[in-house]
Image (cartoon, rainbow over all chains, first blue to last red; front, side):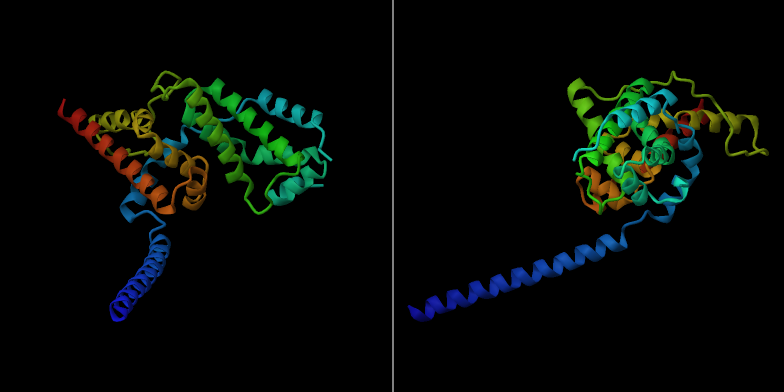
Length: 81
Length: 195
């Protein structure tokens, strides 16, 4: 009985250690994966560059009156002490 | 004092200390990116103006109440506020952005292929004209990443933080967005050539 419990304990401990080590390994792998893949492929980058002029045609400016209202709000809004 | 030489962090500090001109400089520096990002999401200039104004009211309230996190970058923080306001708006309206092509988008020649045939030029011009509409056809998550990356000039990490996803997910969405745009353009170009 004691030997059986001991076997079960050893197996569970081994499983837990394996799980922890696998998780650590997985976590490290994921971190490295995020670092190495945090950019577009050459093809994607090339296509993106080709459409940038088109995308830039959509650039807009807010109206001057909106900026004025924001500044007026700021001047009228006192700093909290 | 010359505010244009100050970085964003310094301007925020100056503004909190009471220098209104520092806010004016922050606005001047970042208004285009912020406004365009909002506009591309809502596709309505008047609505974009309202959300832009509301965004800066929140910015002002946070800065003047001393609740600003000094470790964060100013522009991504403001874009996060704008992004959340856009989401709030769509939740209230319970609608998705409507695709429109009626606010003055003209055909143009930006690539300057001077030696191409008239037919090729017409195909290319029509294809690029549709890019604007095609962006609106993208799934909202992909469109969002494309807009933040291009118009907001945000890194994938900053985009991931704003949209509460991993960097990999943000990057994946950008890849899908570009791939979908490429497929749509190729399909459109092919259909034009066959007609």
